[in-house]
Length: 126
Image: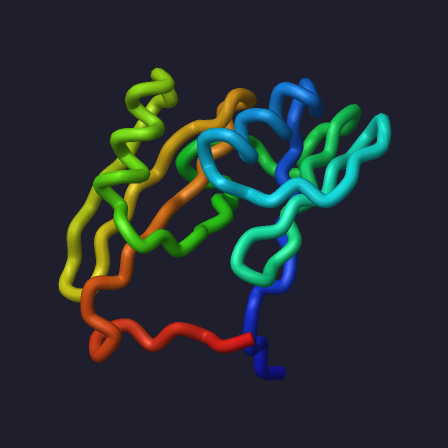
């Protein structure tokens, strides 16, 4: 088996309209459509499905699963999130990349990465 790319991510939320607004306004996802229990958004060619009315199959927190999204400017992302009082719970700089993890409105961890040296990090294509 060879996985070549991530095509979609599900994020469980308690208030769908609030989550759509959060991810569209602060995180920059493109809204596609919504029903009473889910909303489809897109970012970088991948689908992000916000799901309401159910619980995830794992516990949130540092040992759970966190989706990761690439950004061009991690500092700009940090400034947007902190200006909106979004908790930034982890930051790390390693050779070739900067990482930032924040908690969404339901306490789900979401990680951002800015690749600073493509020679160090090989990114999967579509």
